[in-house]
Length: 343
Image 1 (cartoon, rainbow, N blue to C red):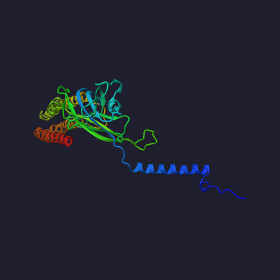
Image 2 (image 1 turned 120 degrees about the horizontal axis):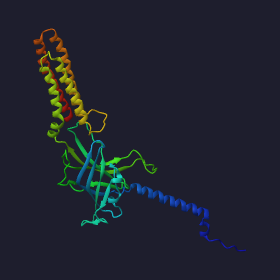
Image 3 (image 1 turned 135 degrees about the vertical axis):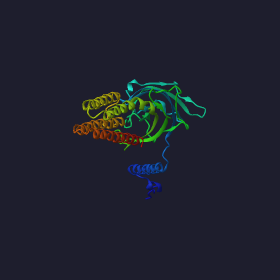
């Protein structure tokens, strides 16, 4: 009896379970190869957005609230048509955001001759920056406008200055009571110490653009307005030492009047300033003036005892000597305070 032999290839066929297992192994190997290739591949470059601004006007600079109103134009240039940084950016130091008015110059981004997309935004609204007052009234304030892209971090989008002079100011820009210095644009990577609740990331970094307009007070004008009255009061108090030692009541009256005048002047000069937890330069000068007037009164009282003993010649000599040393010490302290402020 003859039995037909089975084809040789039938012995090599796999069962369905073995076939599925082999297919899974093959897909896993391909996925592993793709992962390795992805690791070796360079990371995609972020979109580069060129940015610039024209500061049109600065209004309502308020030291008490550390705020100022800015009217400015900001322009954006970019290549990738899939993004629109002119609509996705956000201000980081906006003050009363509800009061900001944003106006888009073009309904759609314009295409420039080099293929870049271009859009201009006009913003009118208040901004906030902590204005240091340690050197008031000879301080320099940096009026800043800071922005980032709200959607893309620095791996996806970076800002760069648009040209060597990316910030300009209007020729008609005037801030009463201040002198305007050259504006600047600073680009930096700002890293947040949080992932904003997204478990896919550890900490995120965003490209930040900061427009900065430094302003200073005219030194001569503020010296006359604030410093001259103060120094005149101190000088008037020192004249009490030139009055005859026998007129004790009049000499002390001059000192008390000068002291009360200093208090009134300080209250008036600080009325427009915010409450701070440190001494500003003007406060230090007032403290030196208080000390000068009080020491003058102490010397008047002390020398009156010398005069009471009948030696008014000695009392007058002590008055002159005391006046000289007091004036030298007072001027020296004021100079040192100015040097410390400028350092």
